[in-house]
Every structure is written in structure tokens, then in C-alpha cells.
Length: 151
Image (cartoon, rainbow, N blue to C red; front, side):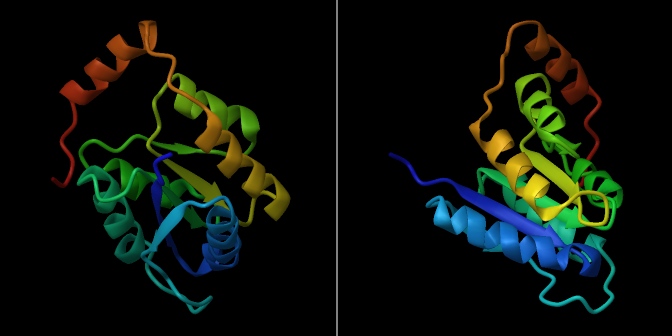
């Protein structure tokens, strides 16, 4: 059994959930690389999200989870990195479809939009889902043709 490694990144508005998700992942036997932030003091999310996404793009981590108030800014920053497919998730369906149809290698969660219990279910659903391939593979290849990210 191979241990997977997940990068985590957040701003101040996602700090509480990041800490809870880190504990949850560790309890599942998953390694975590935490890119911060380390408190609920106001910070600029790109400073923490980009390194988390770069770790996934470079193959240092198998996937990533980023968090903020809504999760939107974090997904935008992540998706600027070449090779990242970050899905904003607000329930189990969006997490499952993000992986099954879009092969999302990162997810973004908004701490101010959903309860913690739902965030943990999203994480588990995404981790346990698999990419369906088939008709979806061709679409991902088209997306990759336009990939003009950071690296």
C-alpha cells in the first residue's frame, strides 16, 4: 500500500478547516505538506496557495486541498499553475464529479460556505473517487492545449 501525500494551503479565512482537515488526513494515514497559513491573522491567499499548487504540479504531492472564505480565489490561483485542475467543491457531488469527470488533482473549499462536517465528507469523497477517463480524457487533452500557467 502506497502512502499518498497531500499539499494544504489556506488564507486566514480557511485556517480553522485546514487544521481540521490536516488531522483528518493524518488519521487516514495520508501524509500532509502544510504550506500555511498558520493562524487566522489576515494574509494574502496567493502567498500560500501557489506553493501548495506548485508542489502538486511538480509531483512532490499527489494532490492538494486549498481553503479560504469562499474557495474561489484559491481555485483561481491554483488553476494558474500548469497541470493543475482545481475544483471548487461545496458538497459530495461536486467533489466526486471533480475527480470523475475532470480528474481534479486539487480541490478548493470555502470555510464560510459549508459546515466542517461537509468539508470532511468532501475531502473523503474526492480522495476515494476515480477518474472515469473515456470521453472525459479527450476534454482534458483540449484543456491542456490552452494551459499557460506559471510553470
